[in-house]
Length: 157
Image (cartoon, rainbow, N blue to C red; front, side, top):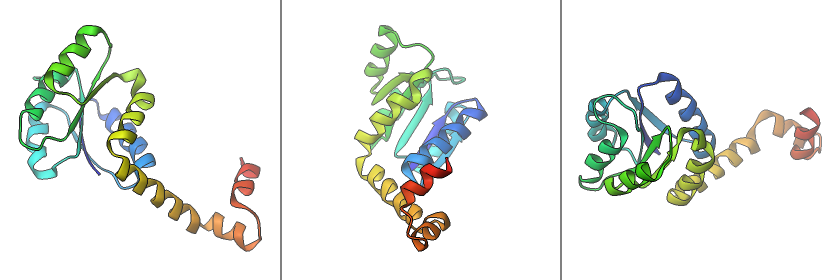
């Protein structure tokens, strides 16, 4: 899954990238610190999802969503704001954003949206995690001893 994160804070791209990889498995995340960087990355990366911070330099997340959604075959766009009032929601909807949320709700609400919007990719990520867990050294060792992996994991934690 190709994701473009437009945010001028470096730490958010690392945290969000790690978190999305946990749920989706193979995620290619490119970060852009501004709308200009986002526009130059889009033709090259062809993201399926754009996560846009509302407070980026030059163009804010809502204006970025409006421009992206006006193009041919646009990706899903999620605008992430610092506050969620009626005006913010109205502007995001008018810009064509697929989803909007507050930063503090990021994990809870974004995960639900992504599960619905990218169900096939989500299912592939789940299968990949199951395959990886099936062949992980701890799992193989537990099987060799005849111990159920879930029981062995609970005992270790």
